[in-house]
Structure formats: structure tokens, C-alpha cells
Amino acid sequence: MTNTSAANKNPRAPAVKSPWAVVPDREQQREAKRHAVLSTAAQLFNERGFHATSLDDIAARLQVSKPTLYYYVKNKDEILIECVRQGLQMTIDGIEASRQAGGKAIDQLMACMRVYAHIVTQDFGMCLIRVGDEELPAESRKELRRLKSAIDHEFRRLVAAGVEEGSLQPCDPKMTAFVIAGALSWIGRWYQSGGEYTPEQVADQCIATLCDGVLRRTVVAA
Image: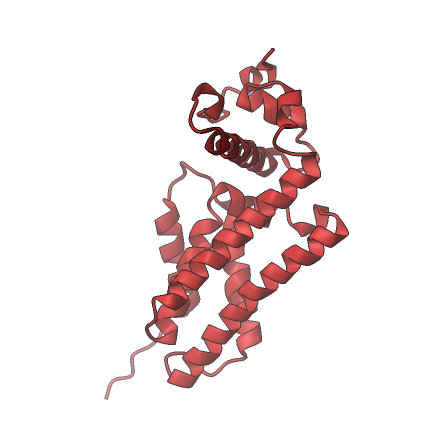
């Protein structure tokens, strides 16, 4: 028996295209259903918070019974671990693709900033920022902090390379990387889909502010 009560109480809940309605290859079907569980959970964690979201809520939005979820996940902690891991892996993959594309350090840095800004406007990336790893068990927290560290070090490397090539002003790469990642991460806290700006416009404006600053520069006449 399906559970639709919570979905009916929330008319603003986004429609979920349920993979339970289709019958593809068995393994692909299971993976699609597991992904649907994770992405729906990420949406709810972002909307309500981790502790305020129950497995019943996730099942209701998917329009399946709660026991159905246990075919794909063990518990709510596992769901959160996978949601956060997905957000981190998307970021790492995007940064690596930017690095592989080559070019000057400043071009790679800008591409990485754009990747990061875009991902934190998506469900898994937003979950990474809004929920955080403090909700996770100790072992999972250690693994995910290792992945976060890899992102931080890539930003530091690119900043240092940008200073060396002369495209960036002399600075402390560690502090500058913290500022960049911190500012872009905060997008995931306040961004709302369907708002005034598209994710691309948000990324453009935030990156421009970080790179150009907010002070108006006075042009000195020759």
C-alpha cells in the first residue's frame, strides 16, 4: 500500500518522476530507484533539515511504502552519507575535468569556481552545505572530510599557480582558498530554485565579486 499523506499535505512538494512506474533492465531499475531515494531525501533534508525528515516523509514523497525503502538503503544515516558523498564526488569530478582541460592557472581556477558554484545549487551539493558532516557517524565524517580536503587543496594549488604566473595578486593561497570556497559554499545556504536569478547568473555575479572586489577604482589621469 502506498503512503501519499505527506505529499498531499505539501502542495509545493516537487513532482517526482517515480522509477517504480517503469520496467527497464533489473540492475538499472534498482540503481534508478536508489538514486530516486537519495535525491528525494536530499530535497527533504534541504527543505526541513536532517532531524526533521523521517523515512516516512521520504517514502510519502516517492509515493511508496516505508518498507520499500529498505531494499535500497539501510537507514537514514546511510542516506545522508550517500547524499553528502554524491555532492562531494560531483565537485571533485568537476574540478578534475577543469584541470584536465588545461590552460592557464587563472582559467582553471575560474572554471573550478564555476563548477563549485553550480553544484551547490543542486540537491546533493546543497545537502552537502546545508546539512554538513557533523550529523554523520565518526568514520564517515573522517572519510568525507578527506574528500573536502582534496577540494580545498586543489583551490590552494590553483591560487598559488595563479600568483606564480602573475594572473593573481600576491596572497596567502591557504587563506584565499578558504575565502573562495567559503563564499561559494554559502550560495548553497540561501539559493532557492525558481528565484530571481538562475544558477548561472548566481555563479557569474558571485565569481565577479570575488575576482573584481566591491571597491570602485579611481582612474588617475596621466
